[in-house]
Length: 307
Image 1: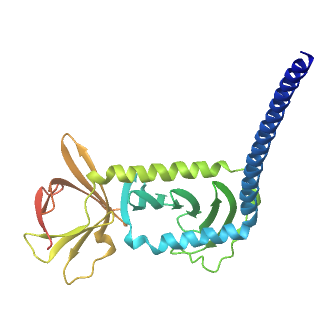
Image 2: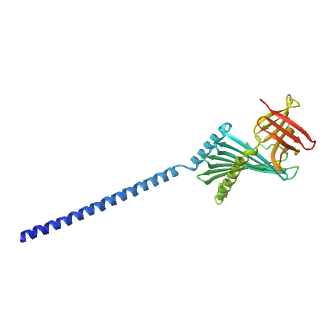
Image 3: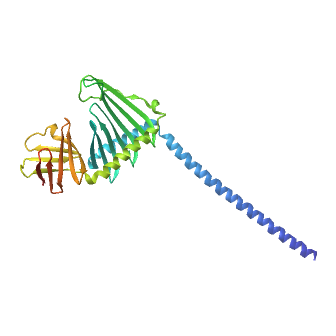
């Protein structure tokens, strides 16, 4: 009887001892698994941090310049959209290049009689990485005239460098900035990181407006007058150009145009570089023909698409 009791007691003790070993083994395995997972995550974070740290400021600037060149080199293959809108004493000009509907380069400018400012935005994978700013002003109608340029370098949504240059001349005309030295003003912009958000807002609105206006724009092409086979007009990237075959087209024959509608009638509003304004009624427009009514004279002009 005592032998059986001892044997029974030994078996129970052995059972619980094995259970404790298994429990400890399970706990140890779980702890090892958790430790391994945490270690892997930490290594991934460390690797990511090392990669980021490995990119010096010069590396990031070099990457931005490479992406800039890539955008510029592919412009001819992209879908270009342009619009101009007259505002008091000047006009707002918008231009964008799209790759399958995704903007690659977007320009927004406000051009007045005595000054202008424009921003050109560059994107890669739909992310802004560079902004070029041009600003022109004149102290008076006789000068002097000043041109300023700024270059904003953006990496991972953050402003990392700002360069600017400025030149003032006494006479009007194109101001050559090629030999003007850039000045690094990045320190002045370290507390102005919100500018990236403002740039994003402008470029997205500009690109969206250009896409939305596609339906009421005029397609690029040449139309020949039915009254005079040498006379015609050309629509080219937001410009309305009047030409006469055999005669060089003068700058005064090149117009910015906008389309407006009133009381069910569509109007073609033209304005050239000299400030001359003309308004036509757009009576008909298709892939084959265009019919305009010159409101000042009451005459009708009919054009056929050049084959």
